[in-house]
Image (cartoon, rainbow, N blue to C red; front, side, top):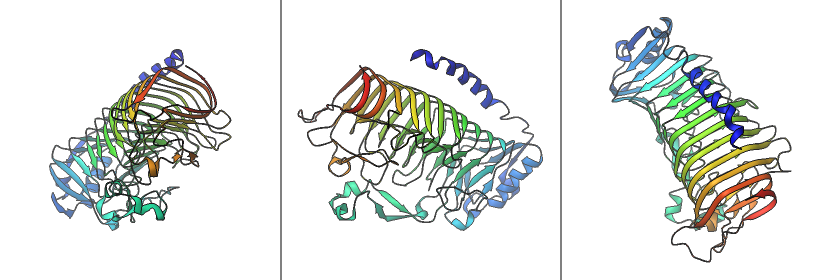
Length: 463
């Protein structure tokens, strides 16, 4: 397995050169949004002034739009090629709480209603968003905080204690759907900024080529559905480094939802801290074709699920190397995808999807559910888990939420979890599963009679 990833190292070096070429070039004009009439009182709507600053830089052939310290309220702003948006220390670009201030853009999202964004660009290139300031999106006005999606039949909702209800998903109203959105853009870079309180997908890169995220923070409410930290859809040549992401939904997701069937190739994630109520790191969904992935030096904490590799009809996840991961997964209440698993690799209910060539090594984890590997006709193959140590524990949420093996969007399987049994591995229809120095034990304080015996069906494995 070690040799199969050598060609990828050269690709990573070339990818770094590609992502830095062009960014920062032609920045001839520097202008503050205050020079165009923006007012930092947190109440004046500054959309026109900020857009005017962007247009001035674009017309000059490129430049930097400076957002000085202060709270600047705004609606939708369109970003342009060769323009840098710089948020100074103490600057807060504050999203309007009024949906009427978001201009619908000419993009049809397959899974969402009308596309509305705060910052957006289509068919542009060499865009930079950087600085020590914050983009504060608006989540609170767009949700019914008293209406919950518990993930249970109505007759069982009453079984939830108050602490469990406090983990459940809150119900959305009409909301901005893609708050920071780039479609068919080349060479986009985010550096240093904080993005917070997203009402839906936070940073979205759709059909893009050449994206670099470095040193950013995303701080979202952990009860909001669909507020993925970063969602790459049909996008290739991506580097994510030194980022901190807290999201109710996936922290880092790769799919082809907005560009069905597209290739998503050449991903490098490193030195990140992630928290999610769905999945911290997700590669693949439906027909996405995900290839050439390296992930290293990641901490996943207080998350529903650690890593999820998924393929549907005509989709694939191939050539993946993940190493040096510390994770803590828990089974939270609510209608989330994920049930406390450290790892799920799933390609069920598909004759044409496949996952192969995956190595995940040097993992230290605590978990409240099994490692789950599920294929069909052995379309999950050549999977290596090396140097894993996982401490398992039975969850207080297991009686209600541990009754099924969650491989959504496919139908769930019946779970083997009981107060006396928590399989460390649940696997079916897998070929070439290689387990090297994989260790499992009970968490401190767990009942000694809790069995960790695996459940294996149609699995070709070696240990």
